[in-house]
Length: 288
Image 1 (cartoon, rainbow, N blue to C red):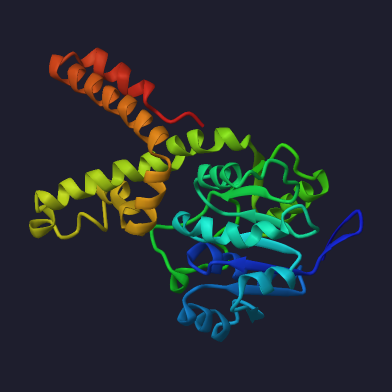
Image 2: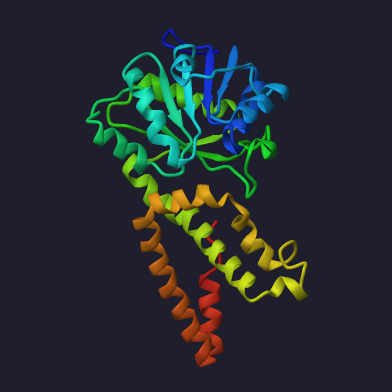
């Protein structure tokens, strides 16, 4: 149980029981910090799976009722579904309910708040756990998915300081490290850290498929450097189509810069200048 200036978090509602939501429920059940972990998903079979495998204590068939029965609400739905969820949740904004999310793009949330003329909100603290795998769906959930990962926290201008602390403690309770960034900066940073790498992996994997390399080299997608680069191309196509579209400007801006970088490297290789090429490659080593 969390206790911040008499604010008690007993029940947690997770909306959306895909890879992230289900893994979150499992982590919460394992740490036994909260009295109840409630779950909601629009797919009844997913809810049954969660209940049968003890990922959640209870399910709710109605989001509004689930919010009423909970103290902390985590929205884990795909980007394409966020407006429908927020349209229900908005009646609970600026109440004692505390909201956070796991979306990898924050502009859809900020756009909804702006379009709905919701300028002052103190109980929605945006979150983005930098966790996941190329697999998706509740069947691939993991109870330790968030261990030793980073969660980005993006409080809004009027976010209640106690609520911010509670959300930070929530993520720390499942072994996340927390970093705070501004909401308006989030999507630009994530376009480089996450979205563009997926974009590049999808394109590379498609080109390899088009060239039919897997026919003669069946192992290339399971071992070796190509497999390392195309692993994340196995991610959910529909989810990533929505993510890339919602962050189009930032992603395309970085991809333009990346293409320029590829052309620069290509030009150096074509000159056959060993020293220039070796210097370029030395500069490319990841900074840790």
